[in-house]
Image 1 (cartoon, rainbow, N blue to C red):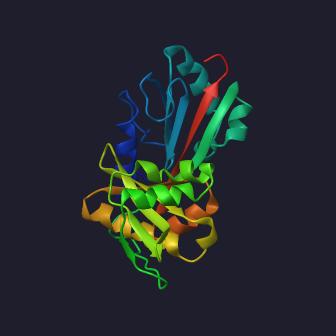
Image 2: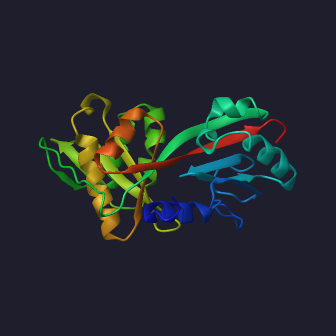
Length: 240
């Protein structure tokens, strides 16, 4: 599986965030390393990154390496981001995720357009208004407030009803951010704006990344040709 170029690019990008030299085991399995500066998870947490048939895990201190490694070796790689299984093996105090991780390249990308209305460049004020129109949880989940790319929007009259963009991450990754007004969902608008953002990222030589928990978001990614390659999970352990 490591010969897959899309998987290799995704793995390289996440290894660059680990904060310590490590690698996805070539024969599958899991590698655990201490990294106080890991960006795979919040500070002081355990970060689990599963991509393909292997995973890398960072822990906040050397004293946790053996404990976490022994616990995770009891699980198949596919279950390393199963919070329920991990709670039975480790003293878990908090969980973030799991979130699926999907990627696309020029060969797999399936552009989408909306028959209802065109997609045009947006402004910061457009995003502010759209974010204010949805519940706070939706606004936080989408990450649209943090995009560094141009925003691509769908308007109905003067109202922005859908928007997408991406935040540029280390390793030439474009982390996609998409949001549609609750009363306009199910009409293909998310696909339309996300397609414009993905096309922009690919034109700039970036690797589009779609990280999601809700199934509707995953469906949009699949429609655009994204392949789900793995998942991410963060754990807070008791006493840490």
